[in-house]
Structure formats: structure tokens, C-alpha cells
Length: 247
Image (cartoon, rainbow, N blue to C red; front, side, top):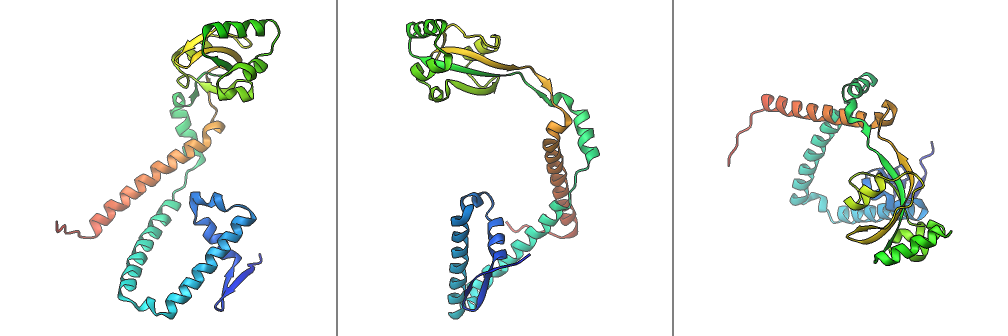
């Protein structure tokens, strides 16, 4: 695969692989550098870094005592991190381990009952009853929400999406989970005002399959094994090296 030279600064090449490495090391911040403009910004960043490096070398700043001390500390830290990284990356999780964990913890893999609902929120009971009458006379619930609701969900016809128990205020939750699909409630009072609720879909509680939770289980087992390996390594090092506390 071609490793294209993108720029030359003071006779030193900046290559495509340099940009890719920089991008990989950005972690969560990498998202802001996606696309052509983001790529150009990374190239400019590397160019500036190379110019700063050249200036520092020219002024013999790499020979300064403070720099040498900082460099040695950085090298020690990086080498220790490299050891830990190698230890963590050596941890693997087998299909058998995942399956055994799933079979031993099935009660943990049950999804609760969920519903998909829409609502209309207004300030008074009288207004809620007037809207309900209009809906019963033929106005669609979505149109009524767009016309009357004070909730931002009005822009999507009052749709609140899918949610489970514990995500809404008690009065709203009690009403919606007692409804049948297609029902429109009478006004429900909460701390926010009066709601008209339409139940669009109901999903009963169910046991999740192994495939549905495989990635979560794998990550959990890997985390636990890495944590154990790290603790074991710490204990081995304490046995191997003497430590004298001076404080």
C-alpha cells in the first residue's frame, strides 16, 4: 500500500502513515478531524510540529538538562505503559467462556417491558379535554400534537420513542403501561401539566438471546480478566522488587 509523502519540512518527510498514526492516537477527539478538512488540519499540525522540532534542535534545546530529565521520565512512563498494554492485549475471551457466562446468568439477560408512545402536553384539564374531543371527531393525534402540544416532541407528532419503566414520571408511566396498543388516554396529570397519551407499540418482557448480549458479555469477561491479570502482575512485582517507603 502506497505511503504517500504529503509534505517535506526541512528535508524531513511527512507521510500518510504519520497522519494515520496521529489520528489513531487522538482517541475520542478523532471525530472532529473526519473528512477532507479534518485531514488537512492534521497535516498542518504535523508540519507545525516538525518546524517546532527543527527550531528546538537548532537552538540545542535537546541538550538542556531539564529536557533530558523530562525525556527520561517520559521514556520510563511510556515503557511501563507499553508493558501494561502488552499484558492487556494478550487477554483473550473464548466462545466457551461467553456461553458458560450466559447460561450461568440468564436472569441478568431479561429485557423489561417497553412501550412506544406519543403524547400531547397542555397546561389545563379543560384544554386537554377540548383536544381529546377534536381527536375523537377526526383530527389525527399527530396533527393535534403539532398544533397544540407544548412539548418539543410536537415536531415529530408527539412521538416519545421507545422507553421502559422508570424513565417517565410515575403518573405518566402508570397510565401508559396500563393501556392497549392504539388507545388514547383521557387527560393524565403530572408535574408538567396534562397529557393525552397514544400507545403505539408494546413489547413484553423477554429473555435476550446469546447473540443479542454476546458483545456485552465478551467485554465484561475481558475487563474482569484484565483486572485480575493486572492485580496479579502487581503482586508479582511486589514479590520481585523491594520497596522502601520514606514518608
